[in-house]
Amino acid sequence: MKYIIFDLDDTLLNDRREITPYTLEVLEKVRSMGHKLVCNTARSQSFARKFLDQLQPDYAILNGGAMIIDRDGNAIFSAELDAAVTRQIIQELLKWTDTLSVQTREHFYSHQGQYALQAAIAFDFDKEEFPYPAQKIVASLESAEKARQIAEKYGLAYTTYLDGNFRRYNHPGATKALGNRNLMTLVGGSLDDVIAFGDDLGDLDMLREAGVGVLMKNANPQLHGQTSHISAYTNDEDGVAKFLSSYFGI
Image (cartoon, rainbow, N blue to C red; front, side, top):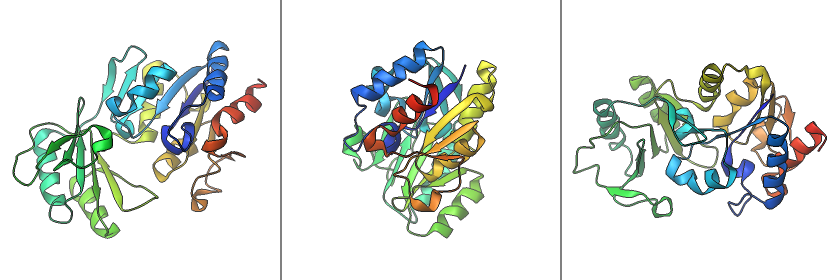
C-alpha cells in the first residue's frame, strides 16, 4: 500500500484552481487499488473545503503541517502556538509590515480585512489583542534577514514562498515534512511507502524524505535536481495524474 501525498496549489490544482475530471478519475482508480490519498497543503481546512469535498482524501494535512484530519474531518493531530506567543509574534511583525494574517483551528483572520478571497475575518491587530492560539501566521516582509531573525527569536518553523515576500510561521512541530512523518507515526506507515508531489520551497523536505518525491515541471527551476523525480508535466497538464498513471500502469 502506498500513501499518495500531494500539495494542492500549483500541484494537483490546475491554473484555474480546479481538479480536472481526469485527475479525479485517476485518483479514484489508485484508491481502488488499495492505496491511500492524502492532501498536504498550507491551506486551512475551510479554505481547502471545496477540494476536500471533491477528493474525499483518507487524510488531510493542513496549515503547513499544523493539523491532520481523517476522512470524517476529525482532528487527529494539532501543533499550534499558544495565544500569548501568538500575540508576541504579531506585535513583532507589525513593526515591519501591515500585511499579515493568522490561521486558527477554525478561522482565518486578516489584518483590516485583507484576503477577501479567502473569506477572511477582518481583525485590526494594531488595536485589538488577538485572543486565540495560531496554527499559522503569514506576513509580507521584504527583508529575508529580518524574517529569519523573527523565526529564530521565537523558535518557529519558517518558510518563504517562491513567488514573493510572503513568509509563513508555524509551531516548530508543524512543517509539511513533519506532517508526513506525524501521519506515518499515527497510521503505522513508512515514509518509504510515500509518493509525494509538490512545487514550492515548503514542499522540498517532504519530497526528499518520501520514497518517491515528484517535483512538478512548473516548479521554480532553482528547485530542479533537488528531488528524486521531476514530472514531465505541469499542474496545468494533469501532472500528478499522468505520473500516477505511468507508475501504476493505469
